[in-house]
Length: 405
Ligand code: GLY
Image (cartoon, rainbow, N blue to C red; front, side, top):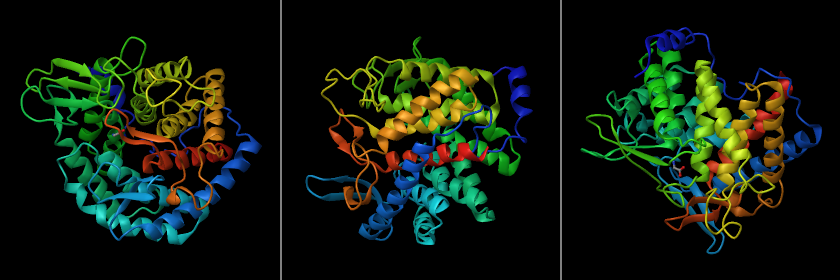
């Protein structure tokens, strides 16, 4: 349970913190490097060209997921799955960077198809779906309709919250089936936006309670995290901790660690509670000090994958970690912030190199190669992934924004 003093501490911040996640790093003297800014500018130009190509490959109301080079096959989805918000999100980021209205109009067109998901109570992924799309659209050009969609989405997400467990349900139903995955930390940003828009602190309190419960139950003493924790929905007791997309129940699935790092960095931005900053710092230390983190700092799909070094990387995990580290660098003490920024610079340089970034016309329009979706299911291994592109473009914009301080 969340303590009374903590609620008071938290509530005092509700109405004064902005949620501008592209320029949240205001703490330290962090200077971007001129050579990397040049590389990023070139990469943003190329990324915009790639997406102008990708949009032409898509049937109306379809969303890009991945591309298999071997069969030259583009995989798309409708607006329902967890990743539908990333495509409009990339387009909006690229529009912000390049000012090309063709990208903006394509984003708005696709968002029309996602709009109805604001009432979808069957998924916990509404943060990914609605905040990466409508959240960015609202940040760029605020509109009452975006605010209303964000609030309705947060309301739908909140219906999955169980007070006894102290979490939003990810999966499962019935007794012994209250399943929460670490990824769910990413959906909380939407709840903070809803509190800012409405002044109703209930969304904020759900986000904080979920983050506290997850901090207690999802993490091991070394601050790596389990993928899935199963709770008893009646008592809130933990029934089981295990993996789904990782190599083993006790392993550190790379994207899970990335979601945790990004999630607690965002929690600190939104609440200024030092416990979240400490948690994000611990997760960063686990990742950056891990002996299996390669020299280019793009992780294998699982830090404990038994086949390392002969196994797939996950560029999506690299991009998420990179974006989170750039933000966290601004909150950490100056010497630690510099270490984070240096690691993020290595990641940005790696991802922007031909080893990971597709050349114009390659990859069917996706920007990054070498993502891994679900290794144990043998699904989407060593391929482009729409969410890898989203967090890579976000990381580039965050890095560029270090100049604006
Ligand atoms: N939330 C799904 C994933 O990270 O694969």
